[in-house]
Amino acid sequence: MNARCCLPGVLLAVLFAAGCTSPPSLPFLHRHSAKVATIDNPARFIVLGKPTPPAVSCTGLQERMLPDGRLEVVVNLRNGEARPLDLLVTCVFKDDHGTELGGPAPGEKLALPEGATRVLKFAAASDQARDYTIRVSPAR
Image 1 (cartoon, rainbow, N blue to C red):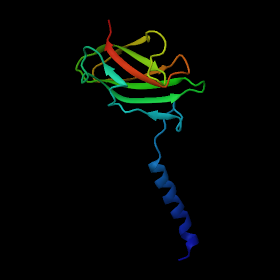
Image 2 (cartoon, rainbow, N blue to C red):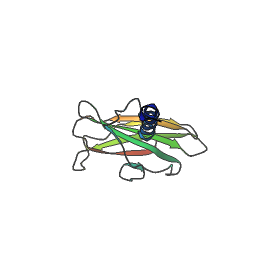
Image 3 (cartoon, one colour):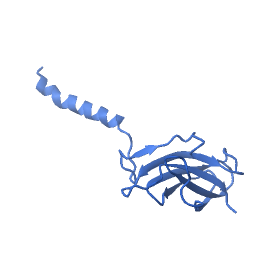
């Protein structure tokens, strides 16, 4: 058997294996500019007051730099309770020294049905943001 007849099969196997090891891409993120933060990092995700952390959890954090240099954060929040939750979700952006940027961060009210997961997106107001904290509290 000559090497020429096996070449297409070998190429297909290599391409298939390379496709299986590639990270999935999301429609709103550029493959090389996004990074996923550790969701167990308490500096990035904080639940204040009630509901307690098991009731609402962060199932994913993604961040990327927008073309204008501003930081964008996408957070997935899941309701682990057997009842709907009304939440206020805030993203506090910080500079490279850890100083909060701007005044009080505006929050986004979120009605989270029981067992549901919702995705929220936040963008920094300036290009000085290098870090952030997502804060979740009961809506009032």
